[in-house]
Amino acid sequence: MSTDERTVEAKTPVLSGDGVVGGPASGSVPPVSGGGATAAAGAAVSWHEKAADAGSSGARDSALGGDRRAGAVVSRHGETAGSGGEASNLGAATPMGEGPGGALSGAGARSATWRATLRLFRSEVGLIFRRPRTVAMLVVVAVVPVLCGVAIRIFGADGEALMAQVAGNGLALGYVAFSIMTPLILPLVVAVVAGDALAGEAGLGTLRYLLTAPAGRTRLLGVKFAGIAAFALATSLVIVLAALVTGLLLFPVGPVTLLSGTTVPLLDGLLRIGLITLYVTLGMIALGTLALAVSSFTDAAIGAIVTTVVLVLVSQILAFVPQLDVISPYLLTSWFQRFDGALREPLATGDMGQGVLAFAAYIAIFGSIAWARFTSRDITA
Image (cartoon, rainbow, N blue to C red; front, top):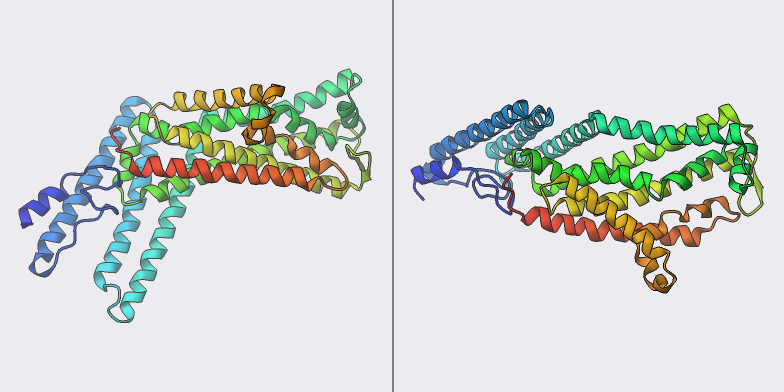
């Protein structure tokens, strides 16, 4: 290939199934040997100029559209490109395998990769939690336990054994809140964030700008998954904290009477509520992985969100049909409320353990589907 051909190739970014600009899997300039070093340097400059132009175009599109997300993506792209350039410079200074400098170059490249990934994750989490709709959803999930506690305080337990436990011990309000919210409210909230993870970026036209930088599709997908997991954990923590504070303020707190009738100390009760929180979080991460897989097949975020919510509703309906009990163990929603095993003495580790395995299987299967689709897909938006 001549010097002119390499320069033209470097100036033409193409996002193919490998997620590259100019063809290579890492978004780098094709290697050159011998007297082509000057031409390679020129090609690298042309590539970075093109990437910067793409980022600037994304920022302008974002400004015209009234959405700040593309601007954040451009910033994130710049950080990743900078880290990639640092790693590239280290590798160019001392090739791997040529003396002690080669090992240092490899270590520097790995360090730059981890720093870029961490910055990308911080940016992703910031984008998730700064969005007004995310704040609104967190407020809603915090208000529900408060309303439940106030209603029980004003109107009484009304004969319900579980509500009567709340009236006798405010710590039980956390369990009540999860029991009410896990079937539909929590899945809906998680589906909104997870369904928007890839489809929202593609719909806004910012996904290709993220992939213009040499970040790698697998790493970007991993960051999206980590952001979903962080949101699922934050949502569960908001629920349990709101329930505990409300319970402490409105009801007496002391030793906890479990569903099995056994009374355990207050600290033991708190640890069991924490176990329930982790179980629910893992279930929502599994659901978020399913939504992420759906999101990888479309450019419309609302389509991915609605599809996930419909799947949840259909699964819950199927679980209520006695003739379909044979498929119930394979439905994700069948395991959402198995956390009641934490409120028995001894702990019902059998049911909860099977639930954890089901969640892990869903994460592995739909995570693999999302990876296979995202890493082989041509990005056109």
